[in-house]
Image 1 (cartoon, helix red, strand yellow):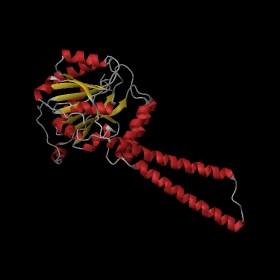
Image 2: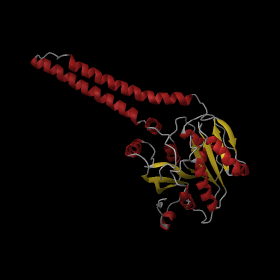
Image 3: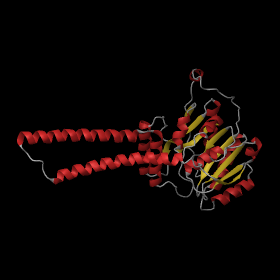
Image 4: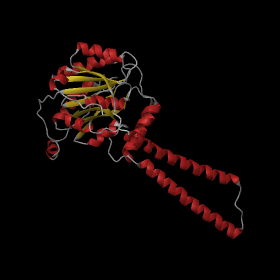
Length: 350
């Protein structure tokens, strides 16, 4: 059962006082692109297509379903081709290998054609039945309607706890306000997608990039469903690396912490040295044994290695960015009917 979404309704006075909003007609129907990156989702892709198509046909607007195959090793690509053969609204973007979800999502955005673009996970954890609610926010003049997860059904307590801590940590250190408990599920207007396509850094944290471009936005609170089938591709190691991407992409806080830690240790060391000298002069106590010296050396060595590691994370990202490699390479594209009609020319992988 799909939980009833909660979307905050602005008062007429608030809308009138919000000069950034440009409300659209109540019966306006934009062309819609659904972008769904998929990696080994053979169990869910057919049901995903059925549910999304059912919702979009009921809306009555022109639409396309952009399926991005991120180097799947199962029958996901073959099923995508079968869906496209039966449904001209389906577009297949087959990447040359597995580039990761963040880059696969970027590829889908690059090749979308609709006036609004909605990002959905192929595992159906984000219900497509909420698309009409998102369109209602679009008609009110917002450029971004982003989903906020009130519950995360089907996930372990550890994953929920670590996600809770991560969003609050990055929110406290990031230079950009990143909404809490928000994933990739969102509606964006064409101008937002166009600006996102200009951001070509290789180390991508899409939730941060979505927030960085700005534009009038509003939340849509909903209950996230368990996976329809299969198992998550996000191990804790991958989640840890994604967290590092987010932190290093949107703050230099770790570098500052390393600097402050070094200064603090140096200051404490000077105080301790002064104390030892004073004690020796006043009482004639010799400097005692090797255990304390060994502990101090190991502690200072650990601080130095941590600081070098933090610095290395940033330098490694600089190294990858300056090479200027394309974000992704495409093996094959099968366009949708909407893509053909609009004669869209999405940017090539750069």
